[in-house]
Structure formats: structure tokens, C-alpha cells
Image (cartoon, rainbow, N blue to C red; front, side, top):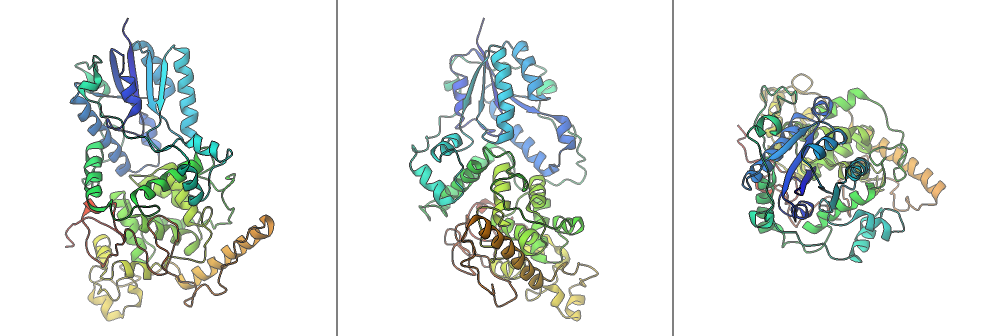
Length: 515
């Protein structure tokens, strides 16, 4: 009787640097690469069609690469706990491999699958490759607690062994005598499903701006490394530093199933946010009346991606900056729309930007007019994503409500008729919210003995609380007030090449016609 293996793909949809897969092919006769999708979940989840389309592109690319090894990807419909006992018997499996997933839900799921495998006499191979470091080891080195500052996290990992080098690519040579059996009806039984099969209406769906898959990802990474990697050699602004932020949030969330909630989350400040569905909907749909904010949310909904500083701007606006709506609501919208949505990083960043955890300088606030104007003075980004404002001159495109009536009519866009008026008065809202945050942190200081308010200015700014955000240690930001830099680059309203999506400061978008 031969030795047969299954490799279970989940997040790491790649053949390169896949230690669990590489080990799984050693000494076996056959291996089948499996991805499990639940059609019911696809039809009922809050994930956008763009995000599902991106996933399917990744699966199709993986299937294409497996074909080069005379194999295919087996896409199985169902729930893992129901699927695996059947596959163990049907394929006479003796080994199961998968990549370690450090998130709480995933660890609970994987424990169930390990138990089922053990009961079936199946060996289980689990290797770390989704993160650079072993999250459990980081927690152990920190007396069983997650490090909650970036500097402390850096200190911990500096005392650990260097990150392992990538393992070699799966090729015919590394496969050895191991084969990947495929039947003639594979496409019908195990093919990658279409969006239509998953219940999505694709009428009017445009082609993806950001293609998914290992092939595209490696090419994009190679282009980035050729251009930018030498400009910064140390965190937090280097490429390593950006990856460490991801690791930092993974470490913070690994043992905290409430990491994506305010209530019951031991590291989250309990803030009495407003419940305002109407305001939340305007923000999510890009109808706030602030062109910079609306353009960002429009790009997010259309393309599934926005630059990280754009994410900062709209997150601040929704929460402590203007609308005083819970970060949990914004996190849900990002989870729905972002192609690269990630449970740990998404929740961590929203807590950070709302000053609910990790970051307490609540008196710094993004201005929804000034920040965009400094980043893209000509307003080309707004014209790209809000064509209704295309006729406005640069002088008024960030605050069109201040444009004279004749300018509005000449632009064929009258504020309050063709484009909404601002939903809040930013100066008043930000001033009020800064005071709210100050009172909340004052209470925290009293109860916990925290010196959080020592540096809070009595008058946060001379313009009613409207300040340019300066996050001293947040990824991609400098500590120069009114000026954010990433790898020494500032934008001047120019259009960006999509190949530069991981580099440079400012909001980046595709080189497309502005007509």
C-alpha cells in the first residue's frame, strides 16, 4: 500500500517558499493539493465581489502552476471538518500538511482537523510560513503576553534566531518519485469555481486593476526590490520594517479572540462611540461631501485597494476625527472591500488609528481638506475617482462648497445638487472629538496611573483642532509635523505607475486616462 499525502492550501497560495508542502512530498507516492471553499459562505458572507474575484484569480494561478507539474488544484466544496474524513478514506491518505495559522479562529479550526487526522491514523505536518516568526515563541519570550509597542516587539525579535531563508521551489526534481494524480473529469469535479457559480451577479463587472496570484505577486515584488529596497536599511520605514508591523499585529492578536472587538478586548480602550447608520453609510459609499474622503472610498469600492495613508485618512475621519463612529464599523467595511484584508492587521490598524490601542496621541488629526491638498495639489486623484468634480479648478476641488456660484455652475456641479454638502463641520467636529478623547484618557490616567496626558496641548492647534497628522512611529510616517515621508519620497500631484504600489508617500493610483 502506497503513502499518499494531502497539502491543504489556505492563505499561502504559492508553490515557492512553502515548507509544509515541500516536506509533504518527501517519501510519498502521491500528493493532492487541496483548497476548500464553502459555497454557502460565499453567498452569505460580507466579502465583496472584488475580493472573491481576487481569491479566484489566486486559485486559478495556483492551478496553472500545478499543471506545469502535471497536476491540478483540487477545489473541494464544503466544510473542512466534513471534507477531510471523507478524503482520508477515499484517497487512502496517510499524511496531511498545511501552513500554520496563528489567528484564534484558525487555531481552533486546525485543532479539530488535527484530531480528526489523528483518529484516522494520518500524520500531520504543520510549518510556519505565513509569518516570519513563531508567534507563540514571541509570546513565550514576553512572559506569556503580547508585546504592545513596536519598540518592545523589535527588542524581542532581535533576541531571536534570524528569520529562516526561503525553502526551494517545488519542481519536478524536488517531487522525486511523488506524483500528483489527476482524473479526466477533474475540471467538473474539482475545478476552480466561477463567480457565477458562487452566486454573484457579474453583469457590468470590470476587469481587475490588481490581478491576483503568485505569478503576479512575485513579479511585482521583484520590481519593487529593484527600485526601492536600498533606500532605507532599518525599521520602521524599511521593507523589513513594514513586514515587522504585520508581525507586530499578528503577535498582538494571536491569543486574543476579541481582537476585532471593543467589548471584551483587554487591550482596547472602551470608548462610547455614537451609533449613526446614516452617517456610516455616507462614509462607506463615498458621499460625505469631502472630495478627498469620497475619492478614497470610491477607489476602495471600485478596485479593492487604497494606499495605507489613504486608509489612515478615512479611518481617522470615521472615528475620532469627525464622525465619532466605532472603529469596528470601519473595520467591517475594509474587511468587505479590501483585496488584502487581513484579520489581525485590519483590526490592529483600526484600533491604532482610532486611538483605541497602541497609539494615544489623539490630538493629532488628519484634515480631510488640507492633507489631500498637500499630497496632490492639482486634485488629479479626485478627478479620477469623482468625475462629477472634474470641472473644478485646483483651487476649489478639495473644498468645492467654498467655490463661488459661478465657478460651481461653470464646473457643471452645484454643491448640494450635483454633489453633497459636507456632512459635518470639520473644525467643530474635530475640536469636540479631541475634547471627548481627552476626557476618556483623563479617566484612564486616574484609574491606571497612566501619564498619557502630559503632552496634550491645551489648544491642540490654532485652527480649531485641525492638525496635520504626524504619527511618529506608524509605518510610513515621519515625525515631521505637517509632512509625512516614506523612503524619502514626497508626491507633487503626479500620476503613479501601478507597479509602484508598495513605494513612496502619498495616495497611489493607476496610470489611466483622466478623460
